[in-house]
Length: 130
Image 1 (cartoon, rainbow, N blue to C red):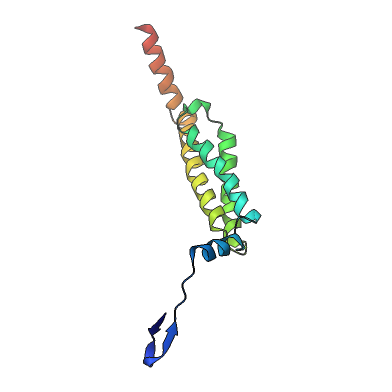
Image 2: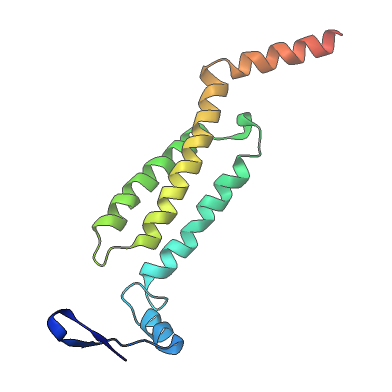
């Protein structure tokens, strides 16, 4: 297939078949034959676990562990950006994990340090006296 280029030049446009695109993906530097693919796939487990934790009461959240996961994801976001070839799958995984873990950390901190625990205790005390 040819199209008109600038100044009357003709350029050739090539289209890849689906099979060619799939083969290119398989053989790419971040494709499924590398750890650049399977590492991020496995790390999505952290995101899923964090999403499950959002349904748990805040007293069940481990603040130190959630904080460690926040630091871990920050470090690996930088790694994913700096590694060559740039690993966008790993970056998106750790960006998602950072968001989920920061939400859980804020729930835990609110419960432990900003009145959530006292509010819960006063609510439970008023229910047992009535």
